[in-house]
Image (tube, rainbow over all chains, first blue to last red; front, side, top):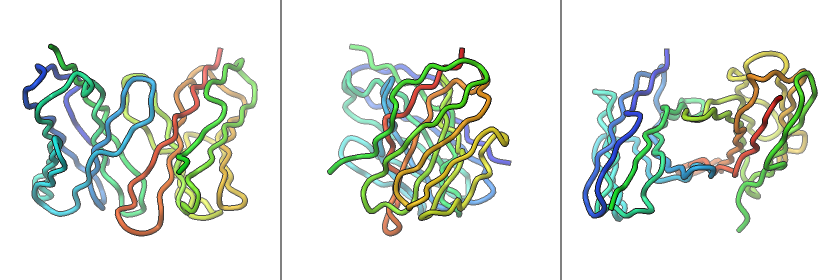
Length: 109
Length: 114
């Protein structure tokens, strides 16, 4: 079966660092994506990992361990505008994305 | 350039009616995906087109759902005999055939079945 788990919600303070974890069990793997989704808006692409290791992109970094079926998204220097839902998604060999339920992040002043 | 567009942005219908949802992908993108998102959940895959053909329709919940992409660009998702459980946001995404192939999402159509 296909299963992607991530925490339902997290709270962090402006200026801090937060790590959102994602574990997955899927029948095929062709990369792991992180998307950001503000309420009422479309998901927007944040990062992509297909090989093990850390990918850094400004304030956002994403890590992947394929042997452990594990990824995390790291957000540094949090800003109020980072309050959103963060979606972990595994791309299947065929191309479709299988999403987790999303982690609702609230950034407090 | 223009992103993925979807029309209508909102659709309210009555149980049992037929609806059509339209997706206009990014120009030149050969792959087109439909997803459905319920409140508090991640998007759920419905169907994927490569060009004009449906490469994977394994996510369509039942035979009331059908989608077409006759000219390899615009796609229409069709739902017959709508049920209250069909209420959700229907998202469309497109991607190119090379490189990272990240999917770019449209703003979605919010479907409400009364």
